[in-house]
Image (cartoon, rainbow, N blue to C red; front, top):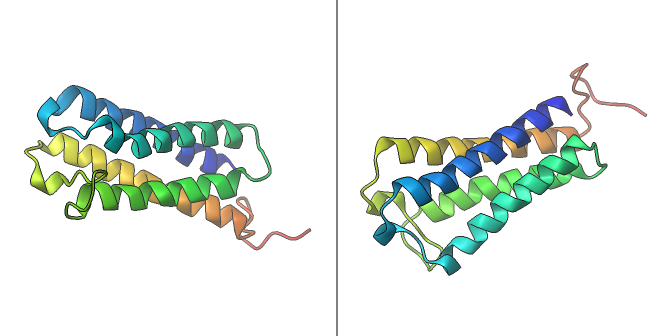
Length: 136
């Protein structure tokens, strides 16, 4: 569970940084509307809630964290890497952003994939210490 906790904490911090990057470093005319930002903001809050569940060792925390990690990674691809497709779309390729914004976004995407891996690895019955299938 320690690796899951670390991955969840890392993603929570990366998402806070991503939100800060949007608010502080990107021009207002290039930002999504409030409605378009809602799924991302709710997702960031959900990752913080997941962090609390993982820290408390709740039974279903690995499934929740793994699912949120996967949704976060897929969300970053859909919102920031795919071509414009809806009000929720914010393709970085269509904007004038510096390398810092790109690195921050790609790091958060990778953090989501890492959390998904760690969560579903535990769900799959892998014992973190021994590296073998858990029994009992």
